[in-house]
Amino acid sequence: MATPSALVRRLGPVDAAAIVVSNVIGGGIFFAPVIVASLVPSARGILLVWLLGGLLAFAGAMAYAELAALRPKAGGEYVYLREAFGALTGFLSGWTSFVAGFSGAIAASAVALAEYIGRFAPIAGDATPLLTLPLPLVPVVVSPKAIVALGAIALITLVHLRGLGPGRLVQNTLAGLKVAAILMFLALGFGVGDGSVSQVTAGGATTFAGVLLALVPVMFTYSGWNAAAYVAEEVRSPGRNVPLALGLGTAAVVLIYLGLNAIYLYAIPANELGRVQGTLIDSVAERLFGFAVGDVIAAFTIVSIAASISAMVLAGPRVYFAMARDGLFAAPAARVHPRFHAPVSAIVTQAVWSGILVLCGSLSQLVSYTGFAVVLFSGIAVAAVFVLRRREPDAPRPFRAWGYPLAPAVFVAYSAFILFMHPHYAAAGGAWPGALLFKQLQVRISTRLTCR
Image (cartoon, rainbow, N blue to C red; front, top):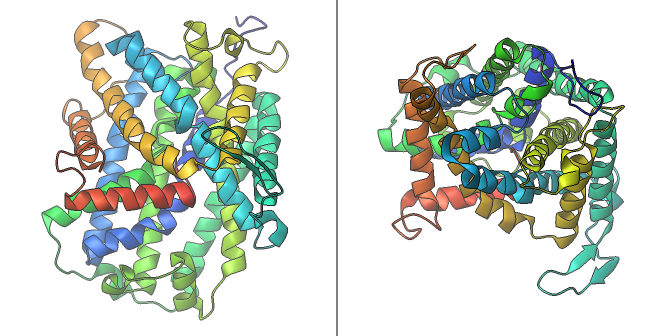
C-alpha cells in the first residue's frame, strides 16, 4: 500500500498512451515531410520512409516496454542506464534531461506557443525588449512574448502540481483535441478535398542513400515515443499497462503520420512537395479546399503545443525525482506532496529553469547541441535490453521486447548512424552530406515547434 508521501499508481494504459501521443506529435510533421520529399521524390518512397521510421520507433518503444516492465520505476532511461551501465551514465542522462532534454524543449515550445497566440493577439508575439539585464555571458531579456511564454509554463505547471487528478484530465483533453483535429482534417481532405489518389501511389526514383538520409528527420519527428516510461511508477499494473501504453501510443502516431503524409501527397505531387515554401499545412489546405486556413491551423497548433508542453511538464520531473532518490539531484526533488502525490519540488525546479531559458533566449543553440546527447542516451537505453538479459537471465519479465534481438539491434545501429551524422561529431568534420541536413533539422525544430 502506498505511503502518504509516495507516488500513486493512478494512470491507466489510455492515460499513459495519451502522454506518448502528446509528446510525439508536434511541429515536426508540418515541416519534416518537405525535407523528406526533397531526398525521396517518390510518393511510394515517402510513405515507405515514414513507415520504416514508425517501425524503428515501435522497436524502440518495445525495448523500453521490456525495461519498464522489468524496472517499473519513475525516471525512464535514467533508471535503465543506471541499472545496465552504472551511476555515471544515468547521471549524465538525467542531467541532460534537466538542462535541455525536457526544460529546454519546454522553453522552446512555450516561445513558439506565444508566437502562434500572437496571430490572434499581436502583443503576445511581440519580442520588443521591455527590460534587459546585462548579466555576464547571457543577458536576460524580458519582452511581451517572453511573458506569455512564462505564463504558459506557469499555468501548465500549476495544473500538474495538483497531481494526476487534474493533470490527467488536462493531458487527455489536449491529446484528444489534437487527434480529433487531425482526423477531421484527414476526413475532410479525402472526402471533399480537390486531390488525386494517383499522386499517393505514384512511383519514382528512390535510392537507398536517399531513404537512409530521409530517415533522420523522420526519426526526430517520431521522438517522444518513450514518454510513458517516465511515469511507470504511477501506472496501474505496469507490467501489462506500460507496454500496452507504449505500443498503443506509438502505433497511433505511426498511423496518424502515414495519414498526414498521404493527404499531403493527395494534394501535392511528390516532386513538388520537396519544393514547398512557407507553411506546408497552409499549402496543402489551399490545394484541397481552394483557400488557406491559417487561423484554423494556428488554433490547432496552439492546442498541439500546449499538449506537448503538458506531457513534458508531467514526464520530466519524474526523472529528477528518481535522481534525487539516488542522491544525484537536489534532495527536495525526491519529496512527494502528501495530498496530491506529485513531486512538487521537481516540477517547480523544472519550471524555474525553463523560465530562465526563455529569458536568456539561447534556446536554439542549447537544444541543437543536446540533440546529440538525447539520441545517444535513447540508443544506449535500448542497448540496455541486451545487457540486462545477459546479466539477469532469470529475472521475471512481464513483457519481452518484440522482435528481439533483431529489432532493438537495428534501432541501436540506426541511432549510431544518426550520431555519426552530427556536424560537430562526424568524422568528416561536418562536410558529409547528411551533416547539413541534421543541422538544418535541429535549428528548425528548436526555433519552431519542438518535438521532444
